[in-house]
Length: 185
Image (cartoon, rainbow, N blue to C red; front, top):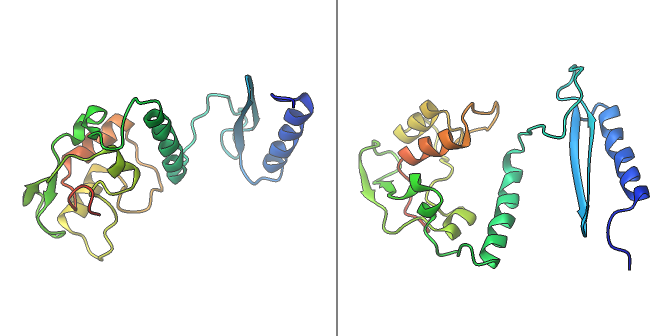
């Protein structure tokens, strides 16, 4: 059985990917495939529609919700390797979430909080039970207003993207109280 990539296979991949750009389905793309020890990276198109500059291998893409399964798979590899455990508090990696406070009620003012009953764990983050999620009620509660003022875009549509670095985003998020106790919702 052959392991690795073939020139015919990577050539066919490049043709298929380029076709999407040629049809105008997307401005450009960067693809990486790997098998065994072989790695192949290809690019096609431009950074944006109407942009004359070709897209580079180092282009940064907004991939929104698709980051969740990627981050989850990466976390599970770290768990498998023993570098972290599901029950580990996330404060080790996210000190901004070390001492969470929880709103007394969904409509409470931001200072009407109680201490979290326990730390936020890796499992809480991976299972979306860290205590912060969607607010389905219409209107603008104090937490919705504060989240919007911080520009986090966690409670509404993610587009257009926020202008925060990951460090700025987590710092802002860490200043907000949770909506629910960790592990409950």
